[in-house]
Image (cartoon, rainbow, N blue to C red; front, side, top):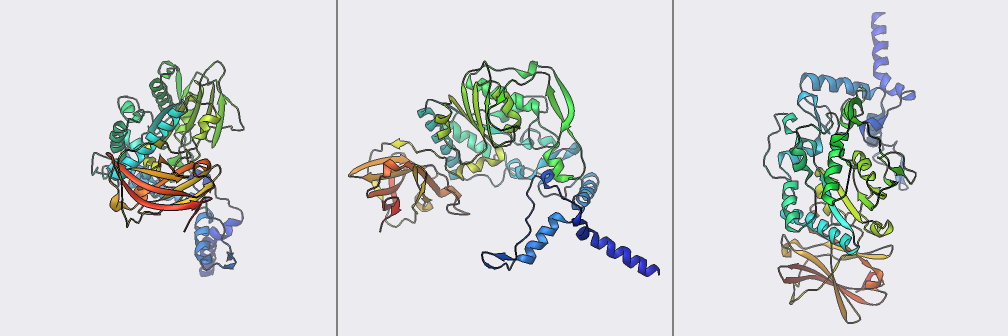
Amino acid sequence: MNKKIYLIVFLAMISLPFVGMLWYRTDMTIEKRYARAFPSVIKEEKWNMQFFSELTDYFSDYFAYRQELATVDAVIKSRVFQVSNNDKVIVGKDKWLFFEETKDDYLGRNVLSGRGVHNCAKVLALLQEGAGRQGCKFLFVPAPNKNSLYPEYMPDRYVKESTENSYSLLKKEMEKQQVDFVDLKEAFGKQNTVMYHKLDTHWNNEGAAFAGGQILEHIGKEYVDYSNEAYQVLNCFSGDLWGMLYPKWNRLDENVIYDRQHIYEYCNDADTTEDMFIETSCQGKDGALVMFRDSFGNALLPFLADEYGAAFFTKAVPYDWSLIRQYEADTVILELTERHIASLQQEIPIMQGPERDIEGKVTKILQSDTSVNIAEQGEYYVVYGVLDSRYVEKNADILISVERNGKKRIFEAFPAAYGLNGGAGYEDYQYGIYLDKNVIGTKDCGLEVIAGRDGEYYSLQEISIYNGEKGE
């Protein structure tokens, strides 16, 4: 009799994760990721040969009480062994949590190559030039990783391999290429107050207010100095790292709440600072702002929106420089977290490259493997490809020559990708440029890809096109 009871209990226990799916609902939002969808038996009009593998993945996301079990496991590992059971979260000292994706920046490994550093700074320099042509100020705002500012809370087992990382290298290159940026890492480093969340990736309200002040002071705009404002410290913030590590342990992080109320208003259907597109207005303020931002901009947004008569905030990529004209902006800010610096060369901005005059002979390289592709997008043709790395110096600029009706015009391309151009291993040698359709026109024209540095120019590839299509 006892054996039957044990067997029934055992079968009930092993069946619970599956049967419990009938009433249990997994909330994936607290883990900051999307759950896998239920697989289809038929995919692209064929039997899905990966059905059972995909079904296993689906079950691993949705079986009943997965998050409760994961939380118990995380508590044991983090509190007893000071390690994480989530490969996206690092358990630090004094119960601090860090995002695993910042590890390479912290350790100084897997840094951008010399060519990659040049590319990222050049993208920023071209964006700055494009804003200037529209009479608009440009400012790049790299948001520091949390462990860049508070390394004392990282586990001792993380030993730095180098004092240089992608940001420190980019900083030197931005200074060389005269990109206007605000060095928040240096500014935060001079403060004695912790301004980031203990259980979250981002800065807290005090950090956002401080960053906003540094940005507005750099621009030369008047602003409210929140260091003089009264505030309370409340346990009212839901940390993203805590939610990923302990999905069913509800604990709120501290946050600074200022007594002073924000005065901006939403002008579109946005209702939180996490929305993709946000338009704001602020009565009594002047100026118009366009800001490209990521999740660090959530807490930052109110402090900037309060100081501009009109502002537009977007998380959309690629960066669309036509928004400057659309919103009649006098200031454009590009905020990007430190760990995503490499993304600057992963998607060309929607902006026609500047026209250039070059002097001197262009030497033709006869057997270059440089590729040239044409795509049509709205009012533009996009010329893009992958450079033959054998003939491209670290600091070489990429030019596109357009010859039409016997006249030649030359434009500088972005050293970045268009879409998924090239794939893995080609990141440093991709290029792309948006060209107005009137530039290429509807008649035959020739395109030439040129690498230039220090007054020397090399032709890497030539093609002819007609109506935006490659010719023979």
